[in-house]
Each structure stands twice: as C-alpha cells, then as structure tokens.
Amino acid sequence: MPSRVSVFQKKISCPLISPKVLLRSQYNSWAEELIANKLVVLTAPAGYGKTTFLTCAVKYLLGENSALDDSRSALGLPQCHISWYSLNEKDRLISVFFTHLVESLRRAVPGFGRQTQRTLYSVADVTREYNLIAGQLCEELWQWEGQSEKK
Image (cartoon, rainbow, N blue to C red):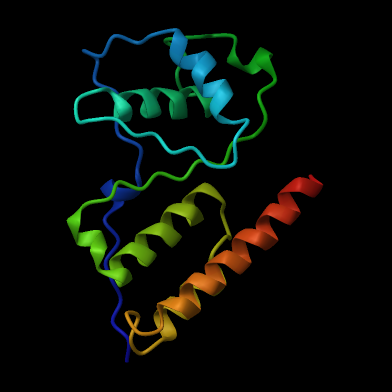
C-alpha cells in the first residue's frame, strides 16, 4: 500500500506581507507584466526581495493589496490562477515534491489534479514510477490550458 505524504500548508501558501515592508507602486506594473507570461522564473541571491516582490504581486493580482492601488478592479486584469510552492531540501524526495506541487495547483484551480493525485497515491513506488505521475500531470495541464483558452 503506497504511503501518503502529509501536506504542509505553509509550503503552498503565499506568505504574509510584514507591516514593516515598504510597498512600492512599481510592483503593480511589474505584476501586470508577469501575467502576460505562461511561466516566470525569478532568480537572485538571498536578500534581494524575491519573496517580498512575488508576495506583493500575488496580492495585487488577486485584488488583495488595496494598500498599493484601490483601482485594481478598474484595470480589467484577467483572472489569475496563482500557485505558490516554497521549495526546500525535503522536496528532493519525489513523493514530497509531487504531493505539494499537485496540492498547490489544486488550490489555484479547484478540481485540477484529480487524476494526478489518484496516480500519485496508487503507484507502489513513486521514485520508480515518477514518469507516470509526471505524464499525468502534464496531461492535466495540457487539458486545463485548452479549456482555459476557450473561456
């Protein structure tokens, strides 16, 4: 019987913005540029503000950051599906990685990942059969993208 990995909600939740953070209006325009892309990779050394920027961008794009801009709804930004996943050394275990990745995506898009989750919990050895899980995840992403483009 395959074992299940416990989901740590903190790993898949956008962090809170400290009240000590100086919010910059430039974050809003950068956030708007982000949603024009299917994938964004942000890299910089520790302490350069990656998490702060992304947290502010997520809050803005989801309409939760009224401290920066009260008129966000008037901008007509498209609906965003934002998945947050903070990686650490434990995510080297493929079962931990897939469990949290799928759960993060499920939080962003309700109903997404059902088949991937079934596959993840049905394989006897995730480290040997990770290609089945990855394949199922890719299939669901492809199907979801096709559905979202029709809307």
